[in-house]
Amino acid sequence: MLRKVIVLSAVALFVVANAGPAVPKEWKQRYNSLMGTINKKDVASFKKSFDESFVTIDDKGKQSSRDEFFQMVDGLMANAKSVKTKEKLLSVKTQGDTVDVSFDFSMTVKHTPSGSTKVHEVGVDTWKKVGGVWKIIKTVDKTMTTTESKPKAKIAKKGGG
Picture 1 (cartoon, one colour):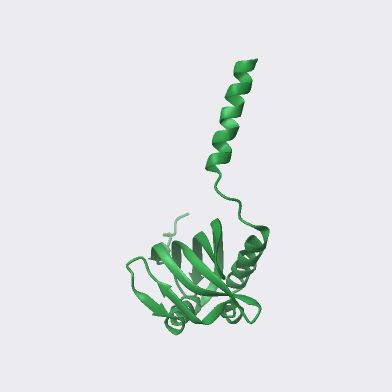
Picture 2: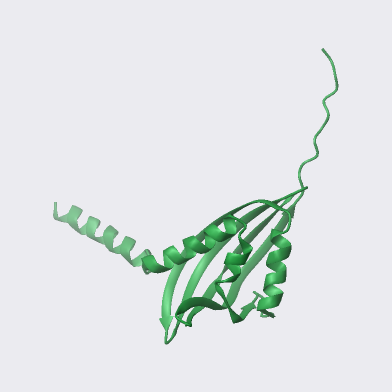
């Protein structure tokens, strides 16, 4: 009996130690809302989450401005037939007046008239309250991959009866 208690305690301790820090509900809700705007293709609302000073740094260290980032977003969302996102928040850390949110993000954008784009991004968003509203001021990517796919050609079936 004592052995079972020790084993179960060890397993519970391992699970708790490896679960990582809990992500506060406030941040889960904020990202759920952000993903909702993307899934609805509501680019205007999505853009409101980013401060005017926003910069993004890719996995190779190249920095892009807010305007450059939104040119990429606009291009990706142009002709979007549907968008599906998946976001996993890995951790939330307060650093003075900013909050760093580590994430693992995947998105599939189906385009008209053809193909789809898959994006996978792992990084850290830095948020700051600006005028009493939380805004993203910086994103630093650890990894970022984009994969384009074309629809499969339809093969005409030969008649026969």
